[in-house]
Length: 394
Image (cartoon, rainbow, N blue to C red; front, side, top):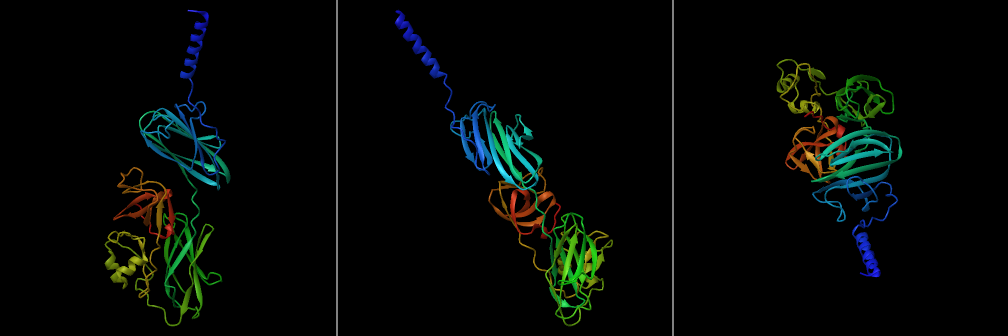
């Protein structure tokens, strides 16, 4: 073999080795995503090393690839990803959520908030972070080992204070009329001062009522006997710097409606039941239930429980407010307001349901098809005043 021939063979072997070991082409680098979106970067391999194989802009992190992969250039097992985004947020405490199979970690402004960097099946993690108003950078990193691949991240914005609302019934009547009052939007167990005042004037008398766990009160006030026919009066409800004002009550001429022999309130005694109380107080069971929306089960009354007794012949209050919720994600439809209860169904993202009642810790009781159950209210867009709905514990 000549020296020239041997040199040519050596060159050809070196070229073959060079081509066979060449790394895959890398994605063109992207500087960053527009504010409010994510720069998504994907690697073959679980350690996010080197330049990313795939880069693209994504509007959210909500992926369930099952046994597939994010892209044809990414293998279905042993891959990793990083999402980087900047978001302009108001001040408050944010609750961050991850759901991943396998590892995921989250940094906010270079601070590690969630660290779930290990092998596991689809698991949700939650953490809270306090943020000032302004632009904040989120970095979410993920790796998939083998099997199913799930990667999701979202946050709950701080709850905005609920406006205080006050409704009264009736909206007109003679001087001395007893008026039913419903107010909502206060903190749990707040001491709420309920007052009567001429429209645009100062309160002339008041009393205090303790709000329930959902910040609602039910009470009664008596319009002044000296109120002139045609004058307008309002009911004020205030606690902790919050205040609401009712629609105006118009005083009409004539005598006030008769009051119940029980007065304006009745304290339940052992052995009492709803029909017997209604008959004793000379009101109907329907009127008694309308005046006491906190009684969700008429067959369960407790000694010491205080019931509002409506005036005889007082018109019923206006119907309950209409409240709907539209799901932002696929949500579990549960029989109880806990994450441990077994779902009855999954309500698809974008579905609008009627809200029947408000529950503990942000859960809402809704009607879905022919059934009623619980969903996570903090993962929905809610239309209407949830605080005006009855509270339900389970």
